[in-house]
Image (cartoon, rainbow over all chains, first blue to last red; front, side):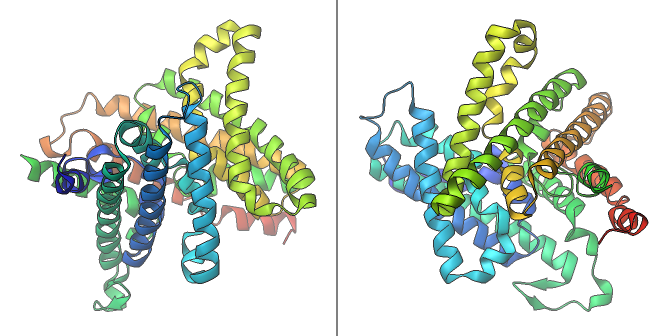
Length: 193
Length: 200
């Protein structure tokens, strides 16, 4: 098994945002700016890597019938840890992501990868899968965040370069999230051919 | 009065799907036909009200007295998962017809972030039990409204001639954006009502 390939698959072939279309709630809700998108992506990646490794280690002792509840408890435990760490060390991130940090528990990417990859592969391969998918998700969120921030507030990572009069507020608001992602997916579809 | 305000604000002004981005997965996944979207809305309404009731009680009478608020996420997701399982078993015995209708949607609800989201939101907003139930019910109606309206739009989309690159998810997301734009027309209605009722 080529570990580099696993990472590449996660970023390009199985990109969670543009190809698998998983975890749409945080994707749309937290990408009002590039920084927010990036921090949500990294938070999800941290949980994904930890849960993938732990679930992969536990796969031989987990009875098949109760595996989903077991996975959910593992995920919820890591999310709780992350929630406490973010509250303690990054209060700004906590404020801007708010409700969507505890909601990482129900992000379908994490349960999906646990079921589809970690429960079948070695811990090391699962680690790389977590990194790959996590990077793919972070990339998708950051890209969406950059487009929305440039169009909506004329800035990139908080660095403003378009005068305020030319900003399209719509892109920071809810409808802009749907429309931007729709067009980004159309572009990705076009590039794939 | 306060209940009417919660009702209108949760359905139209702060629609759970179109304004708060919760429950997007079922919104995009189960909105191909009006029939299935109605079934999904009913299942979500049922579980959401029940889950909010139970999690509110768990938070108030178990977690807070025991000083275990940090276990909120784990406790709530476990409550929701077991509740969905229990509802499934009870429905199967008591009302096979309803089970047939809702059957396939029930397991999907565990990972519906709207359910966990509402359970956490009512705690964050420090609502009492009555307000929480009202909020959960109105949110579920708002979810159903968005889902059904969107299913109607998608049924029409099937018949129209769409440029190749936009087919599939792309046009669906852009349409959702336009629907969300339409719902933005309601913004400010809640403040107007609050002034009308003389609440702050």
